Structures are given as structure tokens and as C-alpha cells.
Length: 327
Image (cartoon, rainbow, N blue to C red; front, top):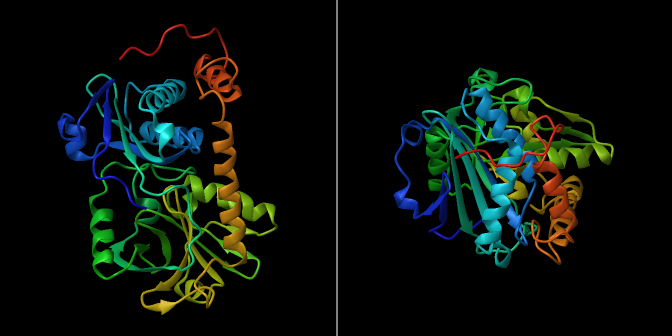
């Protein structure tokens, strides 16, 4: 996934160049959480799910003075509209960082050089990292999984080391040598009808693309287990897949120099089903963007739904909110 090197930055209500964001303590220490998502026809993909996970992570690590989901959604859509993002596919990164009295809000937009997800005709090569996955001992978290910390120095180091060896991703193992997830992706394997997908119960991030994919797997009758993957299970799997907001769903053809998955290296039966479900979801989003742009005019049903969501209080009931959160 190729992004333009320079992007646009919105910091606490102001647009600025990337190099001019204040070096607050939270940026220096990584004290915050973030989300990465794509846009299709100017619409942010799975925005509700990303905002829920962002706020869950922020509360989990103890950030104070947080905006509401409605406030974030309203401003994300407004920013996309004012920057004419509908004219090009983009990646959007949204972060909440520790502040003195309230959390800082950071939005970074980068244009993508490619349109939507493309079905991979060849699998990716990945390898094991020397970095050990901490499992459920990573810190705060619970049934919904660990927060997506802003500080990712160790993961970035692991990915850089993997790329030096010609791998596209580094897989992390736990103390028992079982595979849990990638540095920037979730891991899914299948054997027969069974699917193993390490997630929150395994200490892995509850990926939004993973959630969509597993919903489809269950729909087509595939039992899904959330647990770490034994090495022999990985190397004997019918399919090995990676999922993420930027990658989509891609097949893995090689792990640590050993062939895995279909001989063709392409998506197998399960992978094609999951990829098609993801593609259809993105097409529905693009269809929702036709006609008046969301948040423009009363004739747009997506805009009306957005207004309905953002005009009620945080519990979803009560009197309409007449003013935005003070910034």
C-alpha cells in the first residue's frame, strides 16, 4: 500500500504542516492511542468500529477529557469534506493523546496512490520476529483486547528487520512459540472447515477487518477459534491470511522460508469468500457516497443517519446537543 510522503495534519482544531505539530510529552512518550482507516469515495470505512476501539483504548490507558464518539465522527466527516477527499482515496490516521486538561486530537490524511483493495495474485512472504509477543500480559486490556498504543517502537523495529530480509511482515510469537499476530496485521489460518484467528483472548488486537472477515466465516459455516496458533498448525494450514485496514485480506505464501497455503500462492476458498465480503462492504460504502455528499443537504440518507447519531447525548438518549464539545 503506497502513500504520498507528505500529508495533511489537523491538530486540536487547526490545519498545519506535519513538521509543525507541537512535540507534546504524549508524542515523545507515545502516551496515546490511534486508529488507521481507509476512505472510499470520500467515506471513511468502518468508522464506527474504529471510533469505538479508539475510545475504548483511550479509556483503558486512562486518558482524561475525551471527546464523544459523535463529536469525533462529526469532525472527521467535516474534515474529509472540506479537504475534498472524495476526489481521491486516502488513508486517515486518528489519534488521542494525553493532555493537561483534555486529550489532544490528531488527524493525519495521506493520499493513496492506488484505488481500493486489489486481490493478490501472489502471496506475501513473511517471517518470525525475534520480538516476543507478551500475550495477555501486555498491560491494560480485557475481553475486548489490548489498546492500540501510539508508542510502537519495538513493532516498528521488528517490521524494519523483516523488510531487510525481503519479508512484507513480521509475525510475533508468544513465550510458548505460538503465533499470535503480525506487527501491523491480524493472522488467520484454516484447516478443513476450522478457522483459527488469534484475537483479544490471545492478547492480539481486535482488528476491524478481522472482525468483518470472521463474521463472514461464521456465516458460511466455519467454526472460529480465538487462540494462538501452533507452528505445526501454521505450516500445515490450508490457508494462511493476513488482515488489516490497509492490506485488506491477503494470502501468505511463505513463512520463514517455508511454503504455506495453496500451491498457487493465491487466495483459497475461504480467502476468496472473505475478500469478496470485504470488497462488497467497500462497494456499499462507495454507493452511499453517490449523490449529495454525506453531511450535505437533507436529501442524503447517510447524512441524516450521521446527524441522528451525533445529535443525541453519549448514552444515545436525552435532549439534542446544541453545541459542540469545547476545544
